[in-house]
Image (cartoon, rainbow, N blue to C red; front, top):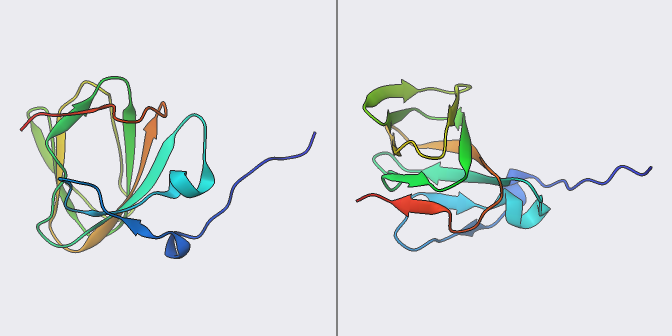
Length: 120
């Protein structure tokens, strides 16, 4: 059986703008087309943040590539640094704020578009 795969360099993925979302988005999934997950790289300037949100079905994995981030998950507050990994279950409300310019590799699964529910 032949191995089937998709490969792309983050540097080659064009940044996309998404309405009402501050950080830049490099949709790795748009380029690689996985069936079961939604991988992206989010690029933040200092002070930028995600919407305060949760998901209907999609859990998320966050890997800090560079920079530092303040995170709120439910009532818990903590910071993430390079090489930290965070997994958040779908129903948990979350928001990330860049303490400095940085990048996050984010994988959501299952691959469900428009699964996020904005709380604010």
